[in-house]
Image 1 (cartoon, one colour):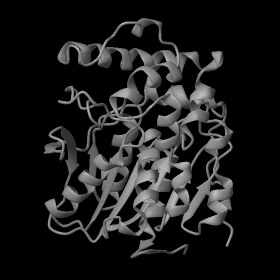
Image 2 (spheres, helix red, strand yellow):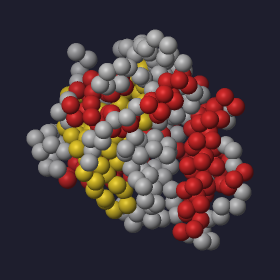
Image 3 (spheres, rainbow, N blue to C red):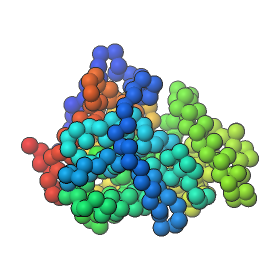
Image 4 (cartoon, one colour):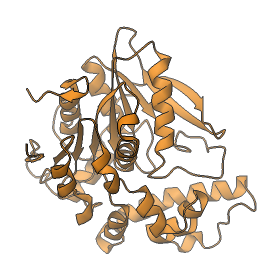
Length: 329
């Protein structure tokens, strides 16, 4: 059956511009925190991950939500998704990538777009920490979506048996393509925002690990190519920015996905290059559902009401997961 299908999303009148869809939710959307219970777990290499829960002792279903670049579990997109799933009867777990929970991580290494081992650690902990969940779904945003897809594709049939499906939004599944697009002048507002946050974290690490990392030249970095080449790659065992992008991108792993997975990338997403729309991979893999709305921006998908369209769409998709299959009815 065809896996490339039209989208149900329609932008509200006057809000179809990709940049507007991207920026407006960040500026105006406020979502009450629905995951108040924080838990810290230790990673095998001695670092830590902070997890934020919303638990109901009667629920047998859990959604695990992974945020995007320089985000955290308190983001409106994350809390909105957690709230939507909770209203549908699911427990929710929003976790923070290393160094994103408000406290620097313990090691010199940083989080990055392909570090799915941390997601695996969260899944293994969650699956055993609250009795036994009958169904676990994964939701990822942006690089959190890339990390989710890479975990599913690289692990293939050896993923945790409780995981029944996944939904990811606005995913730069080809990191080199996304980096090139974000270097353009029209996207300088986003690049400056991300690099401002990333510079501050590098400065913190330089103080915590004297001799291990140098902030020299940090203020002259203007692109992800420069930042990833100077910091992300060497701190995480890659040879260069290009080596990091090639090895951490999820697109080469999509053929290995073995459970129902929905990938939603808006065609007007200002963060995504042409290679971030994996049409051929979706056609070749019956488990990969690709949805390409005309509008939506990057993590936008604005609708008026209690939930954004992305939240309703994720709950709908995951609600139809049945065992290892997927019911389209």
